[in-house]
Image (tube, rainbow, N blue to C red; front, side, top):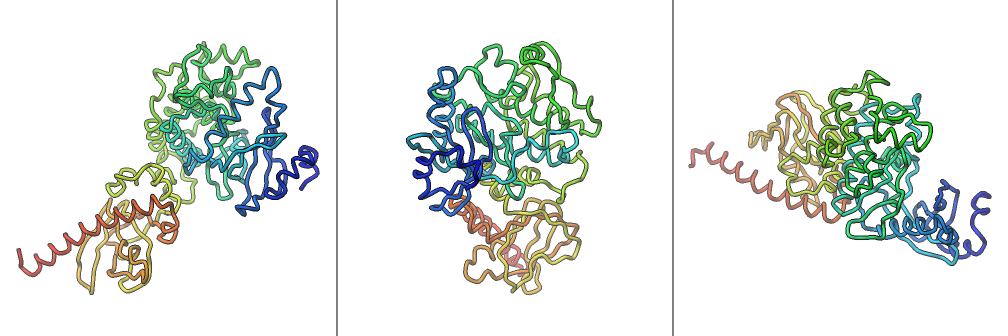
Amino acid sequence: MSDSTKSDISAKDEDTFRHRFELKKILGHGGSGEVHLAFDTYAQREVAIKINRHNLFEDPVAGKRNRKMWMNEARLAGKLRHPFIVQIYEAGSTEEFNYIVMEYMPGGSLRKFTVHDHLLPIPKVIDILCKVCNALEFATKMGVLHRDIKPANVLLGAKGEVKITDFGASFSAGSDMTQVDMIGTLPFVAPEHFRKALPSLQNDIYAVGVMAYQLLTGRYPFSARSPEDLIYQKLNEEAMTLESWRSDIPMALRFAVHRSMHPDRELRYTSWRAFFDDLVTAMPQAPVEMEESHSDSQRFNFMRKFRFFQDFTDTEIWEIVNISRTLHMGTGKTIIEEGKKGNNLFLVVDGEVVVTKNGMEINRMRTGDCFGEIGYLDEVRHLRTSSVVATSKLELIEIEGKSLRQASDGLQSRFSKALLLQLVEQMRKTDQKLFEMMGIE
């Protein structure tokens, strides 16, 4: 344990935690407590632990607010399960403090990418915004508004994963436990808040718009010198346009960001899906700077329109995106070879493939089709029963079979059902083709 940690945690508290948590270092301080990196000896994993000391709740000014914010996060333990929301494992108390055990994100926050000389590539910013939109859409459906979205509350994993954290200021529908007078961080607070409007998802949409503006320019939309001036500008003036700071932002992206932070919420986006769709539209216009031709968000957007996934939830589709990749192949390329082992699945994004068995054509697959299901469903041998060859330039999404078998039980069950339904349909078509070749009607 570091000396800085020892100075903040009393000996009594160490006795309470030492049989389970090994506190390593302080990750950050805030008005309502501190966050520590720790090793959970029970679960055998690194975790982040937010600690709120009881004396913070006794403060006559901030005590009530601090207690409500801690309760907000504690109530959500295990409830907001989404690929892009930091998981809260548990919450508890000792004699001296309350604590929340959370998923540890070693990459830090997006805050470091909000300075002018350290901005992310535009396609990466769009991809992050799409994931944030999807996560907040999920939270909204669960009856939760975040109300403190900002770069410091969007964290990165070791491999660049994006996850929202800190639901302390959240508003839950049907509960008065979450209402506090001043919530959020002033530059990200929507103008209607100062007109005493009731909270809505458009408050979060505005905050995401401001975050997008900051990630793209390294600046805030307004340049006030005091909180009072900032509130006045939000209520009475127009923000500086994105093109005032840089000229390489695609028009579709400028439109999406400006609309998301429109001062009149009647003209702002009314749904996360509409915001997401406009962001995805901006992706092809952005400079090609990403390793793959398609971002995670573009892959998600294709999959959710794919008939195969019509019964899947957005969360399940994102889970699939995380275990897939985009492939490009030329005409004549063999994707699957009969008799060889393999259990990966493939979705045709663009192009055509021919399926043969014993040298005889039995099927052709085009955009929107899935193949490779036999190798996946055959849990013992994983043998390919046919060959698949590209008959044109081909773009595919490859889903890793091994990872799919380690996915959530709900996803595996839904995927297996969809594969079986498709297999039955393909067998029917193959039988019909064989009958036609044999002259049987």
